[in-house]
Length: 222
Length: 78
Picture (cartoon, each protein chain N blue to C red):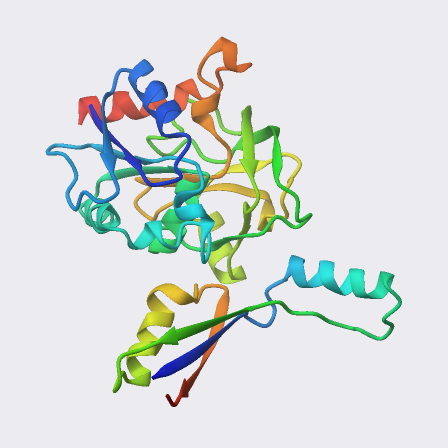
């Protein structure tokens, strides 16, 4: 399985993402944001956390319009897999590949801590190694993780099983406690918590490992 | 030529920063401030003849996130 980790100026979880994917068995290449094309045969694009372009204008807005993002959109439109974590989730909403927007945390503070999540669907190649309603612990580290969308959009996401994860105790004001959402074809996932920071005992937990393992397995068989 | 773009959160979208400013004003003794909404002003220096339609496309594609924000454009002289 071939994965590309995108690197923007200001990305800071790109290496962690690479380590997590390699540990799961993926063949990982790092791709600079000015590259207008993805490497040949890429199965998964991972957009890492960080502060791309200094969060100028809006988090993820400049990154969503960089040359590589056009290639990422084309990859997703061909049915390719995309994982966006934290700033990567913000980039995905800014590109329109995922609905909604991530606003300033309701408490206005930057939040950096472990949070508990529930698995809301196992019907995706990202989440099929978990059990329905399983409780996971991932770290969050963000200032703008307050997920908002119109009620009709939220109803649609919930009705179609496109909410991947919810917070047990929402730290940031997100509508309906949503922590991560899937695209209509379930091949694009964006989430604020960091699964790649929970893949080693030394991280304090390994709840993220099954997500990467499931992806590699699904895309290796494909 | 110049253009000025105002970007505001849409009505009905909670503005936590505006709320924090409202609370601070109340704490400072400024009574009667019932609402604060915070937005952005973006000034553009443009080639002569740039159309308002072009600026509108800039707003929709980058300057505003129309999921949560609305914008207005003032086309200026000189």
